[in-house]
Length: 157
Image: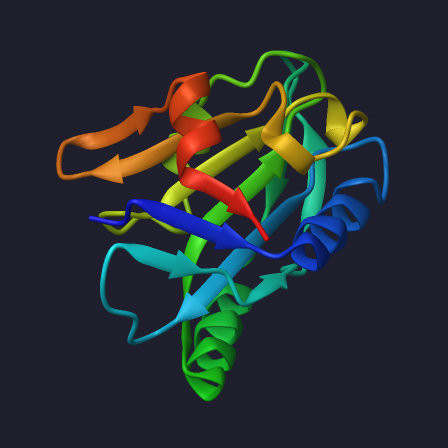
């Protein structure tokens, strides 16, 4: 089990810039070394897939990523000796509950993976993960972290 996720300030800043590209949902992936041992995970890169944002007829926001783009990212990860470990995306407002659509279109879904949902299209930033929801993939599905768990396990260096 991964106890601490270490993210550099520069990756946080890159992710914030990515999320603020427009007034629509945006998706990103964080990678880590493929062969990392122990209870610590060091995030290496922020990967931004080619994606198409949209809005459902019920007013919900979403983003779609083609299968060939996901495949390209996996080959790129292999070339870098990395793997996708965290999926992140924005929501339009303060509700950062993982929706059924989020679950159906999950991209990083192996045990120990994280899914971070950022409110208000990242208007308030990502540093400190204020207002964000963090879900951890366990054998039985996604488990939402509490605020104290976020503060203890997501470490910005």
